[in-house]
Each structure stands twice: as C-alpha cells, then as structure tokens.
Image (cartoon, rainbow, N blue to C red; front, side):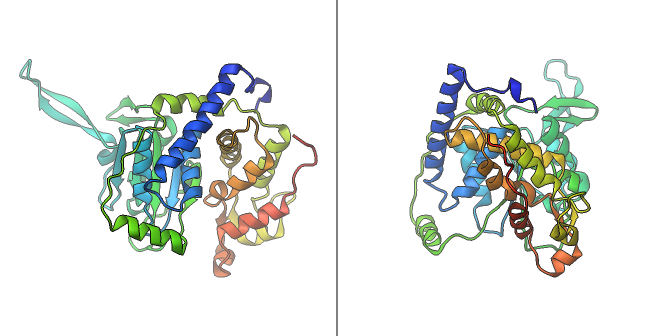
Length: 342
C-alpha cells in the first residue's frame, strides 16, 4: 500500500470527513427507530457500505436480518431488492434474461433484456446456502465486477452496489456450503445473536402495537460514493498495516513462525484479501469515530468479522467444539503489537 499518496489534510477532505461522521450518526439514530439492540451489527453493515464491500450475515431465524438491511436501504435512499434463494433458483432468476417481445413501432419480434433482481443498489441474498453452487456463482461477477453477463452481453449495475447475504446456522439439511472462493469475497461475516432480555422485551412491545415509523434520509448514493473515495484516502502507518498482515499470516497452519493452536485446529488460514479488508475497514471505522488515521484497535476490533469465515477449522477443532471466534481471540492474544508507534 502506498502510504505516500494517502492523505487527509485538504480542507475539503476534512469537511467531507466531518460530514461523513455526522451522517453516520444520523443514520444510526434513524435506524434506532426500528432496530433495537444491534449496535455492533449496524456498525458493521454501515462500515461495509462505506468501504464499498459486501457482507455475509449469519443468525438464527427471527433476528430481523431482512428488516435490518431493508431499513438501511430506506434510510440511505437506495433501491432494495430481496432474492429468496431456493434449490430450484436459476442464475437467470438473479441476473435477468432475454425475452422475445414485439416492437410496437415495427411490429417485428425482438429479443429484449429483462433485468433481474440483481439490478438494485442493495441486494439481499436471503439464505444464500439453500441454492446450488451454479446459482451461487451468479453473484460472484456482480459482487466483484459490479456487472453481469447475459448471453454474451455485459450489463453494468447501478452504483453504489452492495450484496448482503444471509445464512441460517442451525439448518444443514438441504443446504449447499458456499465455496471458499465466494466466502472470501465477503468483507465481513456479521454474526447476529439473541438480544438481551430488556432489548427483547422492547422488541415485543414495539412490534405488537400500532407503529407508523417515518425515516428521514441520512445520506444518499451520491454521498456514499464520495465517502467511499474518502475512506481510501485515510492514512495508515506501516506499523498498523504490518499488524493486520501479521494477524492474517499467523492464522495459516504450517507458517514459518506458526502457532501451535493454529497448526492443531486450523485447516486453512486467511487470504491476503483479509489483510486488505482489515485495513480498509479500519479506515472506515476511523472516520465514523471522528479520527483521520487508523490505529491498532481498529484492526483488533474488526478481526472477528473479517477472519471468522476465512479461518477454516479442521476436524480436531470441530470435535473439541472450538469456535472460529475462540481461535481469533487466541490469535489476537498471540500476535503482539509492533513496537514502533504510529
């Protein structure tokens, strides 16, 4: 990463950074009208958007995964599309297809492209692991390239564009595990857990009474595109970048300076993309916190969402019921902070 070209010193950049923080806070406030007790989840979804990534959301049914993403699309004034993934879903059901239609002017039949639900700003791929790999892979091009190819023709997707996919962790029958190559393209794996008793009681009260919630737009697509460019300008020291890379490299079994618990419990470690997302997510996190640089805590706080779907446990870890989050906690304890300051 060329830190010499990164700076956040121009007056316009500082003003834009202040605007980003203010709009982020307004977005969280608006979402608080409907979403209860999921502050860290909301933060990770918004960091995904500010960094220009895509994320996987994992949680048992009934924890408002769909409601959360739909609400964020409303608050950000973005087009929303939900795709329910099923075993019989075809790639064309996602990308769109050519239909034969009569041209009203010429009377001749012509092939007309009918866009699929992928043509939206925020796409929710609900229960993505319930459809076969062929259909899952239809998302790859869209997630990575922001365009789709149908019948040899390429169609660009509207910007900004994000994919949020959900998975149910408790039902394995009739599911197709996502290939590692596709998992690696998700910036975060966002884990949604049960609410506290008080928060759950608030949800029950709110959802069983009459409500007329009106959201106010906190930012729009134009703001988001500007903020995404700004995020990449945030400076990061060599020491912080090295810390992110050290976490990634030492997550791999068989490494030269490998850790015993990694060698014993990890089948495959994280890829280089993990280090990139740790740094990029750290930049976004710094800005929403009102800082103009990335520190070590930004990297450490994002280690679990970035690494939990990239550090793949082996049979021994699964048999001993060692979770991915436990492995990452051990990794954070085992990898020291670089001695040099920022």
